[in-house]
Every structure is written in C-alpha cells, then in structure tokens.
Length: 264
Image (cartoon, rainbow, N blue to C red):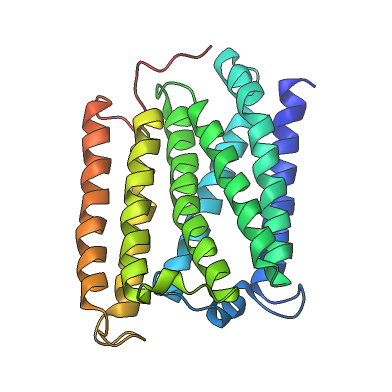
C-alpha cells in the first residue's frame, strides 16, 4: 500500500475511533458511559472527572498530525514516517475500539489486556517518529507523546479497576498503601520508558493525571483528605514529572525529541 493510501486510512481509522469513543462516552454502548463504569469501580488513584478533558486535546493534536501527513505525504521524510508508524497506529486504533466495547460491557479484565496492547503499540509508534526538524515533526512528537503519556496512567487505573472488580484483598495491605505503591511504580515505569523514547511530552499528561488524583483527595474532594500520604505523593511525583519533561527537553537540545534519532 502506498504512503498516500496509508495516510488517508490513518485518518479514516482515527475518525472511526473517535466516533466509537463518543458513543461510549455518552452511554450508547450498553447504556453506560465510561465515566459511570469507572465510578462503579472506584479506586484511590482515579483522577477527577475534569482531568479527562485531556482527551479533547489529544484528539485535536492527532487530527492536526494526521492531516499534516496527508498534505505532505509526497515529501520523502513524511513518506518514510507514514510507512513506519501506520501499522502500530492501526493496532492502537483497533485496541482502542475494542477497549471501549469491552469496558462498556464491564469486561474489565479483557479491557485491561487491550489497554496494555494499546499502550505498547503507541510506545512502538513514538519510538519510530522522525527527528524534530520542521513544524510537522514537532506536532507529531507532541501529539503522540501526550497520547502515550495519558495511556500509561490510563492503563494503571484500568488495572486498579480490575482489581476492585475481582475484590482483590491486596495481600492484607491497606488500600492507601497500595495506592502509594502504584503511584510510585507508575513513576518508575515512566522513567524506564523515557530512557528509551526520550520524548519530553510523555510525562506532561502524567503530571496532569496526578493533579486530578490530588483533586480527588484534597479536603474538598470526594475523599476529603482522608489519605494525606497520597495527597503528598501526588504533589511530589507530579512535580517530578514536570521536571523530567524539562530535563528531557533540555537534553534534546530544546526539542521534544532527540535530534540524534535516525530515520532508518
């Protein structure tokens, strides 16, 4: 398949995925929205509802990126990029759609496997992005970096929701203790991912997610300050995520991606 056809197919799958996500968000699939299902399996690390507005930013950036690739698909660098990222992008769209369906039917275990596959496919895609020369490549780095970063925390929350569904006892440890462990593990996992991908945008949505978790735990939040250790952890780790983004940005020569990345 030629790069031109792939670029249009990418946009078509994006629009299909957006449509399915919209149906899921308004409760058309199985009569329950994702928010309602998430509320049915509450965890101590689920961000506030307002935090999920980031999806609007993600889908807007993706649209700009995909349209730009269609417009410039005759350019040699763009042609190479389209050929490199199309398959993992197709996998991510398929996993996204299947995740919406399984989560809407409360098949949380299956949805957990799908969201992990979803995140892995995006990580592979981000690893194949071009060097950051030109506005188009910068938009790609931002769009897919933010997308992957949000999927990391979404995957962690999905796992936590599955454990709530199966009534896991946490080996006798308190829920607050497990929440702290998960928040720290997410940080360590993200650091490992950053060692490989070095995309400065990845940790920014994680900082936003931790802010959303803090909102849930502050004195006026739904937990009314019952877990001060979690409140402190979300603030500290959220700041660390921002500092990581700044550090990677500087190390990359004030770019989202390292200039040394090859285009092979």
